[in-house]
Length: 538
Image (cartoon, rainbow, N blue to C red; front, side, top):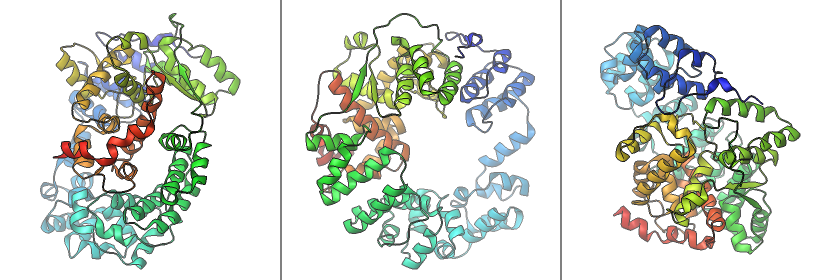
């Protein structure tokens, strides 16, 4: 097992050297440390050597930190061109236009600016975009040309789609678009935007959707449900079920088949699923069957592990070993993590060993936390951590969210300022500090978002997203017989949409583990009538 002693990095007054970077494997974790290295007072030569090693050189944090340290005319030229709006960009060289032009920028440009872009650029895609968007009715220009439609529609912003692209399409036009997978993306933009009623209604017929992915077929079903065409919804649900791979998604389809038909065979099918999710919890609550097989993990082994669990480079090596390990090797590997302080890594490996058919729910530091926090507060904390990081201490996300509670760097700094702390970002790899900051942020969200599901949306997408895209756009208003389930499916951001469901399922289990079992119906009841949400919406 590669417990590499060379990567013992200081975590309080954090500093990192180029030699340490040179010895790290190419990885997301290394990119984070390169970013931290570039944030130090380093010279141009060392900055170039560090940046050259990055796995993703286009990551914004890395790029901006690099450009502060290095005089790189080519990269600086590209960045300046990307900042320009189309009016300014149209006056630049063709090289600058090719770097800075985009469909999204074109949606905010005048016809004159677009014509100038058309005359200057040598990029055929840019030329085509400028041509289509500068003359005539853009919808009419693209609706009969699938490639033009995907290029413009899928890259536009919501406001442009609503104002210029939400028009009725004929069945023949829809079928032409649906013959290619790219229309899958368009369908999500159409169905998940409550204002796009014309295109939503244009989708309400049985067309050949075999070229579309599972999610698009599912959202064709949700669109049909929204417009009270349940028979059509069942057709698309069956197609989605055939295409979905993960059990969670298959269970979601089965759940909706039950909601529409009330056929108890679907409930039985859900009850027999090996997955523990909000849909199978609902089924078991309806059928009164025996609860789930899950394991509450609270390890009594408080000895110190020789493994530096606060180091994301070590976790990178461990993940590589997990990926290639046999069943026997996985069990051996898990034993090395059977400590309270590495309970996340331990459960992570065991879930892999059991092919994710056995579910582990750790409660690290429970005795200490119980002194200051209620059961509901701890259940929500654990529910969020389980979804964010599986309790792996040295977790880093692709957006550089850090630690067990996956706090974003900007939020770490904001909370530290509010609390009067002087810390480094790497302090988030200490579980106690990560939990402290996670609890702080959850308490902030709880002041405005009364329900665990809404708090989960806020934790994942931000409180602004939750207010703007969920509350103000009328979700969870209690106006449909399918509430709150329909609103859960219409949350516009995919990650937050599924994240909320998974956190709510975790929360239900943790309430039971912590000694306050709650009927599932009681848990979702406040989301059905919408009264509390309406009060906040007003």
